[in-house]
Length: 126
Image (cartoon, rainbow, N blue to C red; front, side, top):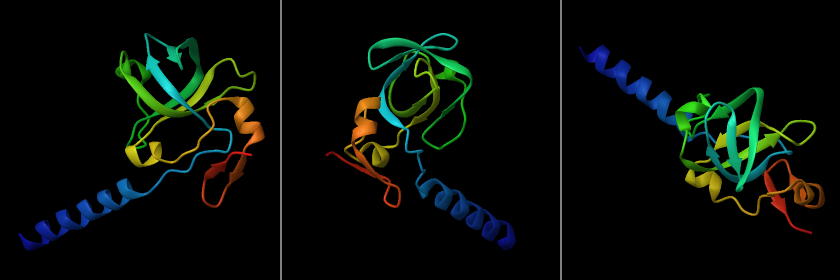
């Protein structure tokens, strides 16, 4: 019985430590507000767009979730665009700690003109 309880405590410790780890985002990641619609449709910063085929949406626990399960809710996210910049490729729904990291670029122009420090994963405005 004690072994089972000890095993459960150890397992919970691994889950808690995994949840506490911070995610890393690629340098080409932008920040915005997303409202998921039906299928691959979504509203990004108030403008209609779509997800690319094969896109990935990750929830706050970093688990990949179907976009359809998030339909109708507004989320603060980090996201990447496809090569042409017309569709959304990857989406990370932000935790409160991740959302607190500021400034973060919201447009491609900002991302191209700001300075990114890859060691601290922070941006600096010029």
